[in-house]
Image (cartoon, rainbow, N blue to C red; front, side, top):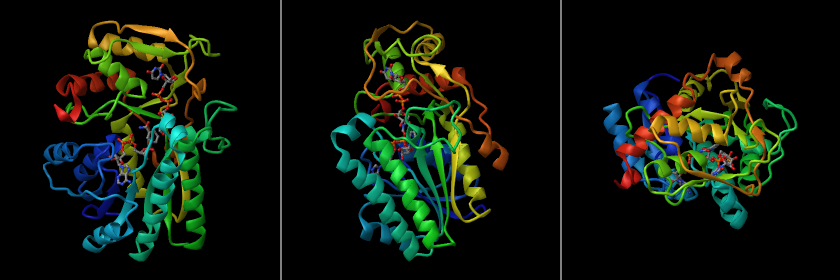
Length: 341
Ligand code: NAD
Ligand code: WQD
């Protein structure tokens, strides 16, 4: 794939998608976004255009709508697709599993069918560390067994199998499934970041909203786990490192065909209390928090072994927890109510 190639990005207005669109534009790709803004604001794409100083075409389209998707492929010489669009809240997936299978699995099947109709053979897919479920051994490499524990994670696992089957049926297809660990942080400009539409489910945006005064205090879900300080340990990865991983993946889509699965994480485990402390240091005030019961479905520890992608592409992360907190805090300060500010 060369500079100037057109990349179609589904869910490009979202948290990871917007940062990736910017990375692609910065590297000279043409970017076409499909997003129905179910969980994002068109303002994010305005900011991507401004930061890149280049145009980006966007369609307000639900990716399950095959005719509308067809129209997008007909209008652009798409060479590869990055497929972010999905529902991603674990708790919600327990309450409305069919909506998750419809969007995440149905949307992926629709996309692959339209790609086939237009002869597009290259795709990068947003997979998730949640596929691993309760880890049998740590750190988690890509051969660790998939043991998803909720409909969201199962939908991602089903997508991986669906894509593997599609690759067997079409030997020209090249798909890379990237299993992200816990993406946090924001673009260093403070213009792009995470802007959940309701009260955040995830720890980092919750901390940021406590720090800015939109929420009272952080509830730490469980301090009795078998971890050094009793709170859950996760592998947080800066969203800009993650975006760069997608840019590299685009370059490597031509290496081989079939489905490749790669972890994107740092290999560094950080506990809930460590993240609460790190964020407090960055914003200059310790964040009020209270210890509460475990959150159902949480697993004690998820840390990536990302040596496969490092060996394959030389990819490694460069931003640590302090940078992740600093950048997230800058976005929160500059956008106290998110993109609606
Ligand atoms: P996000 O919600 O910010 O972005 C998803 C985007 O997809 C949003 O802009 C949303 O409006 C769009 N979308 C949803 N349904 C759509 C539909 N039917 N048609 C068109 N657009 C639709 O989420 P994110 O954090 O940027 O995650 C991006 C991808 O990465 C998702 O597939 C998610 O499952 C995966 N992932 C996220 C994390 C994480 O913790 N953020 C971790 C692992 C994997
Ligand atoms: C991290 C830790 C919580 C909020 C989720 C998805 C996973 C992937 C990444 C998409 C946990 C604790 C949280 C709070 C807390 N996403 N916590 N108080 O659950 O590791 O992963 O995002 O693929 O699939 O499950 O991330 O940020 O929700 O939680 O104590 O208010 O913080 O219990 O231990 P999680 P998270």
